Image: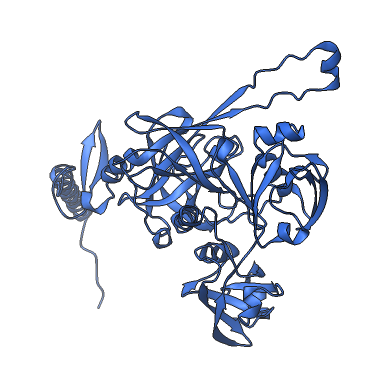
Length: 500
């Protein structure tokens, strides 16, 4: 059966009309929906900024023809620094240090041309400190007060006191001052071991002589080391933060949001000398131990394990058959050391000290530095595919240097001996311009060399030594041995050799 299309041109026009009508209706509907959506977006605000809503929410608003979105958050979800700042700032002090230069010594030329004594020129430095006891003990950095002839402390309320140096420890850059005062505001020690990466902290001090300045940042890293200075022995396990720290912050407080002291600000990482993004603080696990030793013993009682070590990477982990890169590899065990006596062997992997996991050399230093010589620690090691526990009784080192007192009352603990600047009467009697006197000689290298009490050191390695600061400087630079020259109160000259 044959079909024929009976639709003429009117059918086509009708189709076009229907299509146009349909498109027009869709357009109208689309416009209507858009209008409703725009109305809802611009007028629907679930939780306006500043509301007391306990849930996070978003809303949109229009301004100058543009659509914006804002967020509202619960304030309880964010740290509040006001308590920590207002509480801690009262216990942070300004430390002013005066150093007086030495007069030029009398020479043969003065005999012919006349001698005119020169007035020593003063150098003034500044830093910060933290009050830790109500009766005036203050923690600061060793480099803030090193070589000081006069120390002055100004409290947050502008009261000023003369301070004395109780003791210092160059290895950790910690020093302890004392002022005669009572009922002072203090900062309590917090647990720096409990700090977590990303945790908020405040740095409080006197940067660029701007008193009582508070800056905020987060903990960027822990147990961090920085570029060593010279060949000096140092213990570094710094807390790294991005809180702004500048010149004058040294010795100031690093506190957590609870207002507890968790570190003493010490250094910055900078190519210009000004803050460039990272700062470093000595953790309170170290500070608390140093301060306690200085108060109880007059010097730092530092314990040593007696190993050399290196961090473990994937290659070394495979070599030692560890399942993962953890712990530190023990490259050498010093003969006669605490480690050797406790059964530690070369090639062991140190995993933990008293339950605290170890993953770097600075972490080993930080943990061991908590203890005193004679104390026992439990260490976890990995050897021959198995983990095992060892008990180690820590020993001390007799070559540690500790300074206490200031000015004419300053003393130096070294190699089992206590030394001080020779008195003016002794120097005049022996016709000396300067020297360092042995006040007492206990077991150690000085006693083993034959030195006795009363001996006055005048030269070390052929370098003139006028006072204990110069003696400390010369010994710090020596690497193999000390050739010591001096004389006794009866005028007898003596020479001694001391191995280091």
